[in-house]
Amino acid sequence: MADFAARRTHGTDAGNKFARASYIGGFVGTSNVGAGARYGIPIIGTMAHSFITSFDSELAAFRAYADAFPDSTTLLVDTYDTVEGIEAAIVVAHELESRGSRLVGIRLDSGDMDSLSRIVRHMLDAASLGYVQIVASGGMDEFSIEALVKRGAPIGAYGVGTLAGVSADAPWSDTAYKQVTYDGRPVAKFSPGKATYPGPKQVWRCFDEGDGRVAHDHLTSADADSPEPNATTLLHEVMCDGEVIGDLPSLDQVRNRARLELGRLPESVQGLAGPTSLQVRVSGELGDLARQD
Amino acid sequence: MADFAARRTHGTDAGNKFARASYIGGFVGTSNVGAGARYGIPIIGTMAHSFITSFDSELAAFRAYADAFPDSTTLLVDTYDTVEGIEAAIVVAHELESRGSRLVGIRLDSGDMDSLSRIVRHMLDAASLGYVQIVASGGMDEFSIEALVKRGAPIGAYGVGTLAGVSADAPWSDTAYKQVTYDGRPVAKFSPGKATYPGPKQVWRCFDEGDGRVAHDHLTSADADSPEPNATTLLHEVMCDGEVIGDLPSLDQVRNRARLELGRLPESVQGLAGPTSLQVRVSGELGDLARQD
Image 1 (cartoon, each protein chain N blue to C red):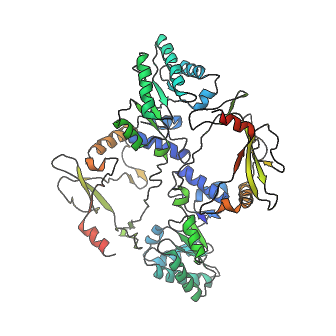
Image 2: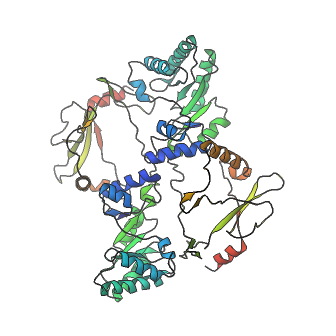
Image 3: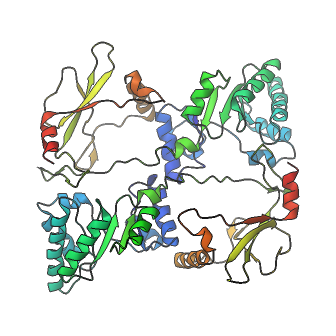
């Protein structure tokens, strides 16, 4: 998957942050050239429909793009008639071959992706272009991608934009900054339904001894001992007196850690359909404070 | 209404743009100090719960704020117990009076706003503080505000955040850049369901001769004559050869124009519940092109 969201994110800041976050989360790159340059994320080339309509013919547009980027061309084939677009792309793919290059992909941006991708795959294979991959984009989300994967659609890559970049199913993060300590004194807010646990906390990650996966997290006060054997702390000091402590990890280190930690979560919390939440236990002394409310 | 959205918008760019857009749309100001300074939007002061919890008592927090901003203090009363918070605010309001200042408002951020606002109003009036207004915030949207207004809740101002700044009911704008002309030649995209009218356009706003309100808009090619008597054009050239033409209006000019133009729309398109869309007529030559698809 690659980030195609910048067109629809809420402004430039959100577009850049989504490029970075989606790369950390496992995307292979971004079409946001600015974010790619800024964060060191691989830039996934694509072309707009307007690029194609600015030429007298689709074939002329494909040729111009392939001339400019002979080794990283993915051709968008649905501007006029998709099958004619595929035929023009095959012409350009063979022209690239004659010059020692290879067409990277064909991009579908509308229509029935399952049937279209099979048609494209058939036409490409019949033209001895088995190495050209099919890229799908246009209103994709995790559910439509899962459905295409399950049906075996021959799609090699997905461009994901709007539905990830603005996240319509979760348009905001319902979190807020809550003060829990001030000048060494624990503090809290007690309004109905919004009560907080006072004082600084630690979150302990506890593992299943059998499969080594995460079993649950355990919330304690910051100075409490480990509540269970083999628990590891999730919170570490990263700033002190306004200064960052130690070296920050690189973006790829962050991405690798995200992959590692996601892989250690139980299967039940990783499903797209009806995932469970990871259990969080609250230690006795915090629970007592909560019940006072 | 005032913009309280920056905490939840998708990054800083969206927060600043929402402050500007909501001010144009009729909000009276923003709690986003940066956007206020940048665009010249009135800054609406408020305090966080964390400001209050950082003091030993709510009363001490209120006094400290009122000392710092004697003429622009709105006190947030729901951090611990709302009625006790109102009582503390009344103490501070009288202390301000003794120094020749006036408390601006009391802010409610949780609970049943209708009943709480009546309690606050009663307590304020009983303390001869009829001039202190009540501000409501916390999960507000156009529907909850309309309901409170209809029920006559004595609320003078609303702080609107998350539900306007991320707009969960319309998390993205389903518009896209479409090329319609290139090098003097009209162009279009023909993919199923995504066909566009080629060539540059003009939009004519047509008015009802009776009440003077907008009757409908009329879409023509850019070089067409006025399709109806008394129609005015909505599209004007603002850039040429990469340069802005003429002077840009000030933010307050934009805001006043927005108010004027909104007031000229038919009542039927302005309702919160089931508004109709303004009719857009498509001129014959564009319609003919559409039917060719």
